[in-house]
Amino acid sequence: MPPKTKTIDVRDQINERLVELERNLSWLQRKTEIPYGSLYSILKQKVMDLNEDHLVIINTALETDFTL
Image (tube, rainbow, N blue to C red; front, side, top):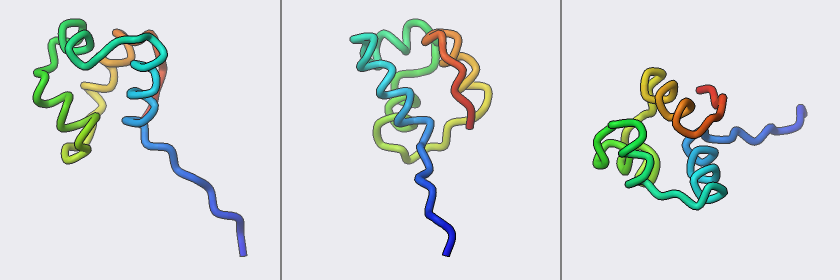
């Protein structure tokens, strides 16, 4: 049986980066101009999928290179 690999959700990586930077969703909303409700639904509740367009904007704000 091949070993199972753990898939890391990019949304978890973004949340971890916000903690490292000591920033919250309000700060990310101001930097990205993505509506707060959308960020909350995507990153915290995980009821909405993160699309490539939003990821590019978030990567720019966080100075990261996360991929979907």
